[in-house]
Image (cartoon, rainbow, N blue to C red; front, top):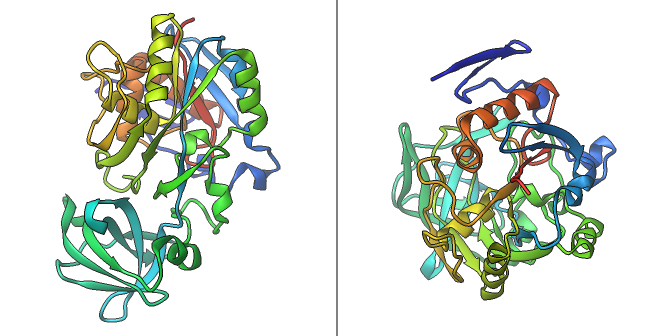
Length: 359
């Protein structure tokens, strides 16, 4: 590991850094008096140049013919109050819909003003949901060092799932968000298909006006779907398998742009993961759908994407490896030093980072 300089008393050590609490966005920009597209945007280029802008300037960094690929997955009310068999209160979080009507789920217990993973559940345990439903834990899906974090579960509900979670669920939130916000605050303006446990937050700042400005400039906006599972915040686990769908028209538009020498810009790590799941070694994108277990690292590299719009990621997050694959270690380190120095805000309600590619 290469030790880096102290920045405002923060020691950077191969992106294992301390994130000050005051840089954790605890509420939506709208609650801070900002429009969605008024969050800050840091732009880092392959040569190491860093610029500061606001997101409404995003079209100024693109050219006609470029393709912006968006994830149209909508956010579910995936957190449901529940009880264990002994009456202990817990929260059940839906993560990923599996075949045969099964789900991967996470159980969490209340601690102070936050929750933490509940790791001592057992196969066969039943968890009773608010509203009369129940979840049966069938088999472990993902273990961490201290126990089982995710379970494969079956659900028995008194109504169809969408109605049940609309009535009894809430958006997933972590301790840095101090109060609950309606589900609309967790949706992108272009969401079309509910299915994500947590918001594909890189696209939150888009507005209809900004999308129109992109199209008017000659930038293509191409959709795909990747339904996000629960985030891996506590133990820095790699991302779990997630369902994706890349339509034929999106593959066609992307491949044509690459042939023409234009750039492919992914809105979020979810888009990069989906695109890389259907790209061959030459970078050609093929339509397809399924569950992806692709993890992007500098060693693997990226094949189908030239640039990425993303949020600012937690220390040691696997997403930082993806960013390093998109640029370089030195550029990434410099960008995060700058973000800390300039007081950018982290997490789903925070600011943005455009990892740009050369024109």
